[in-house]
Image (cartoon, rainbow, N blue to C red; front, side, top):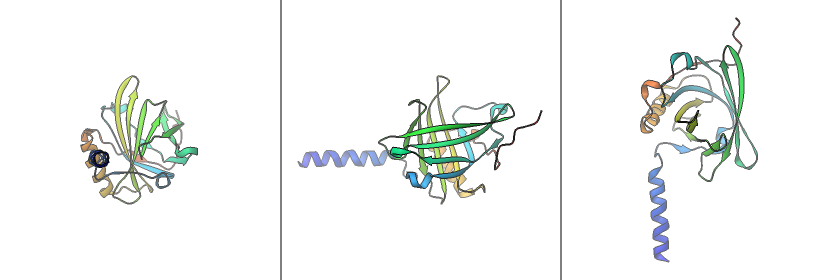
Length: 177
């Protein structure tokens, strides 16, 4: 019995040490609502023409069974597009599976009030990709949240030079030709 207890305790300690000590998984109720994208970084350097110049708020809603749905609006070819991403809850707190299991999304609380990190690992076009987004409940940039985001991305090995801070706009308006 003592050996079993010791094994379980050591396993828990190891698991806790493996977690990033400054960032904790977010509870579903903390992430439901509209979020403004403050900064984005990916481990692949996107050409300037592919980088988002403008970003729009994303909306997260709760689904049955602890799953989440994110509604993302983006501009492509001068036109506004909406995409729904269903994130299926996994057994690991704050971790979700999306795109048929091809991507894993981690939603992490920041020590800065009303800010989170959406961190994604997975496949895009058959190649491995990692990206992170700093989001906040209002469109104003928090320098404290940005510093925490930079610390997080550094720990994850994401290139600091790839961090972009696109213009935040309230809604998408198609570009005229």
